[in-house]
Image 1 (cartoon, each protein chain N blue to C red):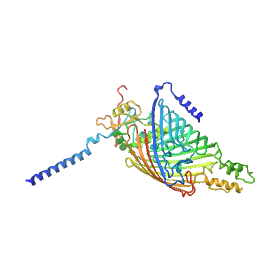
Image 2: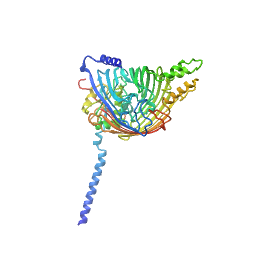
Image 3: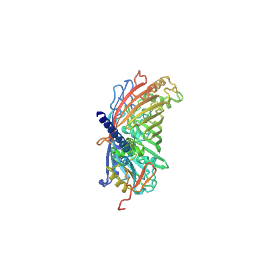
Image 4: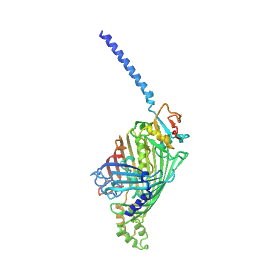
Length: 403
Length: 166
């Protein structure tokens, strides 16, 4: 990570002009103070594999964030931005992270390039998911937003924007690498590439995104299973090697497809996304899934009630009969039964209320949200315990502001 | 005697009430209310621009980066808590100010764009729009606005005169 920091620092330094007086500095920030509580201790609601997420004991950490951003605008074409955000990461620690750090070059009015730490536009709101003020919900629908295990990209992207009559078309290719620490292991992404295309016309926005992630990891927690599976001669078990591959996160390739639409006429807001994740390798831990949600909100002055329906479906089977050796088959099926998300539906009802801005606070709002989750087995939940009946009721409240 | 006095008092009250109602009705459609209407102002370089509500919304949500002639779009706004801002956003764009704020902040915090330039006063707005090619802003409607051209009829676009030194 330190060498990556150095690369970014060098890039930023290289972009610094010699005349400091020409630089236009600006700062801004955002914060979310949130509390959520569910009605059970038998399962937690949170981001994938996140320990100590939302349960009956309540959580201030899961959705709370504090972000500060500094932008140096050298001229109309070159700027550099650093954004630090304190949030609860996938290891469960609430600590500061360098979330964005990039140099932006506006080549033409239609074309810009960025290099450094970015957020890949995997989903429609991936890049702004931490900015509570900019989001409708207390947290984005996790059925969709938990589909990708990584979100921060160290690399480059380009944004090309064209006006075609009433249509504004934005094309955003990106390329780079990533890494993320989750509770039990460290995921490396040596290569991550993708493309997001957005079309805006009037109040309507449509978006298609596609990205491919190559995964590596520093540990193999199921080596005791995969090693013997690979060792079995093909003549005895023709599928053992391919089944072993489905247990390996290292070497897996995940393809994420996302289609999103949004209609916002200033009074009515409709947002919907469909996303699917297809794994080539490692699918017993990161199963093939498709997910969707639809949100409707209506503004009444400063008040906006909203409702969301969401669901996710697992396509990877929950058991396998492809392993002809009984002992290995039982062990592999035991792993499959305990890992990876399963089907889940949820609905949410919430309300946002805009508070008057004051002093340096440019905008502030409060949100209250009720969620009902209906999971088939583990669903999209963490830390699921025996006896869990799949149903969770949860309430959340947040105060979001920007400054 | 008492009866007469009472009648006079009632008539007087009715007269006051009628006057108050008249004042109320007239104030609802008074020039005072019109004087709070909003003009869109554009820089002298945009003499031929045609703005409908859809384009205006795209411009103020910072989705349009350049005008059809290639001039970069420069958007100037008043602070969010200025009543004129609220009026302009609601009446001309059909949006609440916080919806715009949300769109701008999303761009700022995701590096996909910049928020409009906030000016402190209408006079500063006029000066900056007048002197900045491709600039657009809004001010309180003035009856003395010169070269006003209604297009479309729901609002006026005021093309500012070029600065004296140009």
